[in-house]
Structures are given as structure tokens and as C-alpha cells.
Image (cartoon, rainbow, N blue to C red; front, side):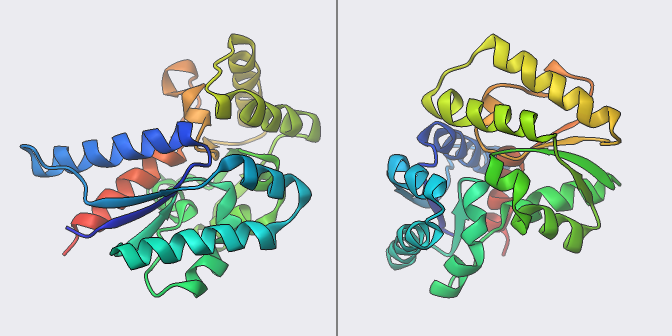
Length: 231
């Protein structure tokens, strides 16, 4: 079994899910008392969030590169960044270490392609929905057209993530707003919707809507387990 290096804490609420899902996945595959072999470096999200909203991506890169190097030194065989937004820095992290990074958009894109989905809605932080690093990877590598909500709804989705979900708050009105936005993405042609922030799965899931949802946390964890157990 390979050792997984988790860069977490963005937020710790979703990192808990990564730890649970990866260990559950290994136990399911191997049985008995098996669990995942992993190292976790959890950053201070207040520091990262401040840098994000200031546009200080160089500062954020320094923090995550330091985390990646510490995980490599601790014996990790590959890296999993437990957040969608910070994959904006994936190329810089990859260049700084000699072990591979398992990209969250690739785990999602593979599932979409396997399901024959060519048009998909995307929910996430404002950075994920508006900057090209995520959408372009899905479009270029997997031929998937990405649709995002209009500006007002993007702001609402972003606010809920930072002011509620990252603090462990689940608000019924926010769930209703997300479900409305998901429905409107489907009306615009999306055949499914990506939950492109690792916290969104805490708020909505497939039981809440008839629109197929692709939870990036779940898909990323599943791919990490597969990679860890692959010879």
C-alpha cells in the first residue's frame, strides 16, 4: 500500500471527510482491520483564506509547497490536496516536489467522461467558478463544457461556503438556495452538477435533487484509495 500525503485544513470540516472516506475505502477493499497508510499536514485556514481574498497566491503557494515538502520528507508516495480552490496552485506544488499530485479535477473529469456527460454545471468558491484553472482542465482533458451560475448566484454560493460551511453551519435557507441554483443550471443545459468545493457535500447530496450531483470530495477520495492500492 502506498502512503498518501494529505494537505488539509482548507477547511478542517472537509478534511475530516477525506480522512473518513479514505480509511473507509481501504477497509472496504481490503477487509478486516485494514486502514489507510497516510500522512496529514493541516494548514491554518485563516491564513490561507486571507491570502485568497487578497489575491496573494504567491504567499499561499509558499504555505502549500512547504506542506508538500514536509509530506514528501515524511514518506508520502503521492499528494492529495483536500480542496478544489487550491488546485489553482497545483502546477507550482508539483514542480516543488518529486512525488505526483492526484488532481481533483481529473478524478471528477474521468467520472463525467465515463458517464458520457458533455455539459456540466459547476458550484464552488468564486475562485473555482470564475478562474480558468478548473474549467479549462475539464474542457481540455475531458471535453466537458462547464456552465457556471450568474454573478449574483456565484456570490451567494461563495458566501455560504466561507461564512457557513467552513464553520460547520448547515442552514436550511442556504440549502434551498443551492437547490434552486442547481435546478437553474439544469434548465440551462447542464446534465449534471459538480459540487466543486469540498464543503458543499455537507449541505446538499443526491437525495435532495433529481439532478445528478458529482461530489468532488467523494470522487477524489475514491481515486486516492485506488491509487494507494494499485501495484
